[in-house]
Length: 246
Ligand SMILES: NC(=O)c1ccc[n+]([C@@H]2O[C@H](COP(=O)([O-])OP(=O)(O)OC[C@H]3O[C@@H](n4cnc5c(N)ncnc54)[C@H](OP(=O)(O)O)[C@@H]3O)[C@@H](O)[C@H]2O)c1
Image (cartoon, rainbow, N blue to C red; front, side, top):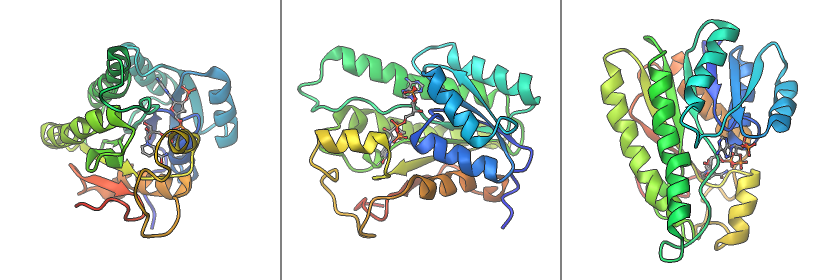
């Protein structure tokens, strides 16, 4: 199946490694061009080199910085003259139980994870036309709380609901908005979470293994692609059936 991604341009948040990089890899393999963002210039340069300079460019941007989304849009338009969508993704919030986490950690995570996603959606959608597509990378914590990750448990469900709101608000323009809920996909983040929580997030995985980044990347690339033209407002777990809820 041709995903119809050739020549399209996407901003990929947190694109220097992990899930974002895996999505960028599939997008570029399918002929799309990507603007990768992240805070560290050296990791971005390595990622751009791995994907190939003609298809990828990097832009240093912190999702907590209000100016980041406009800058990423500008890079896409300057380099390729068009924008077709975005993977709205960044680093995850710190570990901790709700009663122990200090206010500053909640505030910083709200800026980076929540408001960063809202601002990105605002800037990207203002530059999309019919056929445009955004996908938020959230977590299965949008549906079922993960022990030891209460900032995620607090913020992700709100972003899942915003996915529904935005899909309704942008639907008339033919712009699609979806959310992806990774369960346990093998990245640096998974190692960190495993070290600080109850191992496999307190769940068993019916498929019997953690996921590989490429498995997430293929789902996300499909969701972003014009092939998924009637998929919008969907909140989709990519978790090997680990989430014991609809
Ligand atoms: N992997 C999983 O199984 C899993 C499960 C549930 C949810 N998630 C969520 O999915 C997202 C991606 O996870 P991952 O596993 O790919 O994490 P990761 O391997 O730690 O990669 C995070 C990416 O985001 C960038 N980043 C981090 N903080 C940023 C910031 N403030 N502004 C801009 N970019 C930032 C990182 O680059 P720099 O550090 O250079 O900025 C990197 O490119 C996270 O929100 C995570 O909580 C992942």
